[in-house]
Image 1 (cartoon, rainbow, N blue to C red):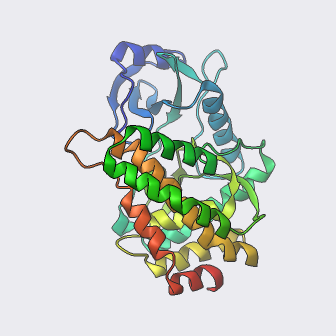
Image 2: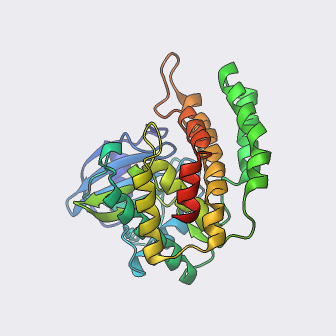
Length: 318
């Protein structure tokens, strides 16, 4: 739970007044790993408010404009309102603030992420990749290999001995993972973080893809593997779910043979990316004596299992 910047009632009321709304109630949300999030009730309806803890105003505005473009292209997502002065972003304590319409929908648990849901969410991701071709050029990723190395250096300077050892392990794996990637795979707009808590469901249908803060220019196969890693892994990979992901994605955007061959390498890089950020965003922020909400070791286990022959056969050929 990331609630790093406090927001009291008077500040919340002042923010929503900028949109022509009247506050009736608000509540901090135990959601997200980086930003501070709130449920906002107004006389005109319910909204979701986000205080960006790492993004500058330019990045926040870019995300909001992206959402409008994706919605216009038919991607299920939220359409953020403009302020009365025409601006997209508000501010609180020097940080950018965004307001989103509240979308009623369920976040499914691991057990409910059944193959039919995997197929549906992979279709939605493929539509994001296709829609990006008609939108402004997205920014480079904030989580490229150089950025990961910088985070790993920070961990080794500031974290506990256990986390320092983990950072050294990840750092040692990076060169081999980089070398194993297939070069020149198709790129464009990627979500970058489409975990289960970033998809809202209306029954068996995707109601909205949310949280495009990590959206960037990247390799489509990487984005698909983030989806597979987050939706198809319990204690081990559920191969039926993996097949459903590939089926759903390719029903909208067929993968080239080179992309199929590159899925494993992109998945390995995604494992190291999320193992690293699980350390910086969760393990290093955990209260003394308390386990982190999300465990970086789960992604190192995924990395090990990516080497399994049956899974690699499914990724490359099934």
